[in-house]
Image (cartoon, rainbow, N blue to C red):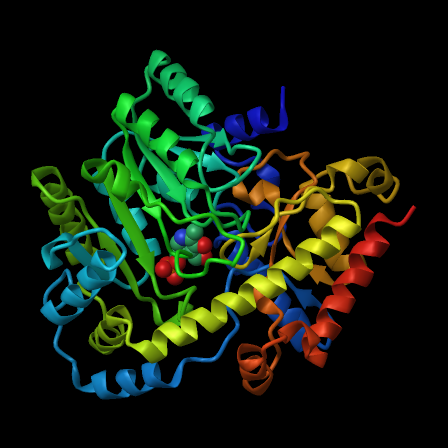
Length: 442
Ligand SMILES: Cc1ncc(COP(=O)(O)O)c(C=O)c1O
């Protein structure tokens, strides 16, 4: 059985016990959030840990966003569940500028895209197909929604999408076993692999979705963080518009994770209207509406004035430079790793040096994660947490945590033409290089 076949079994039955232990108790908090808390506690006790374990862009708030937040403080009424007319029109404009003609009635804003993704899983009956590996939360959300989640291996050249042929096979096999395939989730660009699926692969997955009558959930939260090396971006909503829901937010591109701003775009037409109404119904019972001041922020951000686009462009360049540098370090240490093309992650595979690692007691994802933090002071999240095989020597490193400890250092990183040469970034990269060299040293 291949590693990915293991992953498929794991995703179907829920992650193995090991995936829930360590930083996470049974039904504990999500492993990435748990690891972040653990690292923060250990750092507060004086431990030196290079933190690559949390998917957050550690950059300061863009000042105009803070101004909009302050101005929005007087918005203390609940307002409409799906968001006020201003923010919905701005979000519709955001999508329309990306080639997806959108009416404001097709969008819902919410406190984070995570909430919208769960609401979607709650309202859409049937089982869900996920890329393996994929973001930690899709599978637990499927479980919360009473669904089966099937992990399907990603292709060799990119993550974020199930391999199209394997998806077709998995859907048919699941149907033959009496399951009810209905949803497929794509992450463009991807967390955890930091890669963007090229247009031809997106088209192939969409063709399978059409053949097998699946709804595509396209998680595009990293869409505005494309590296120079990225292939052209193609949204499934351009290919199969009537069966694609796009979900995105401001947590990653604008480093606003703690402000909780997400948006979903539903297909035009009666089926999309029904889904949009159902998600609004869940919203009305769960979070009521996006907080008024955050709607003021989102209205400004989704309108994308020139100064904001410039900030996005510079940040994307920073993310690309640092992710590229970490990629080169892990490859030099002996890992196989797809070159990152979007977002701020790398997903190395230390399988090629398995024997050397085994001599140090590192035999699977969990022991690799533990060895890195306990012996080498590097925090990462093992592949098993992303639905990968338990014995895979893979992990996700979030490179967006390396921009500096203080807002001044982070601002310097954003403004530098050559961020890798800044002493604090060069120092962090040198520490990582020492760690991974020691990991794989004979
Ligand atoms: C792929 C992906 N989707 C969605 C989210 C959720 O983001 P938020 O709820 O902050 O919008 C994250 C955050 O880590 C993510 O990596």
